[in-house]
Image (tube, rainbow, N blue to C red):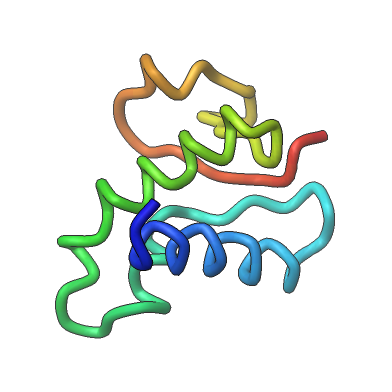
Length: 83
């Protein structure tokens, strides 16, 4: 895992820690927290970091409030602690 990958996962954790246990964050929240100008370039790396965290059993990825399989996710997603 690269330093950037670890930084992305750590930022996901820190943003989730600031919210209630069942609240979600958007990948753009993570990207914007790490870069003012190039946040769009971080969107796919953030999504990959979230997928790794799903595989590790740490978080869930949701769409429209339902947990989804991150490998088939298309469109906007949200990230939350595993329930």
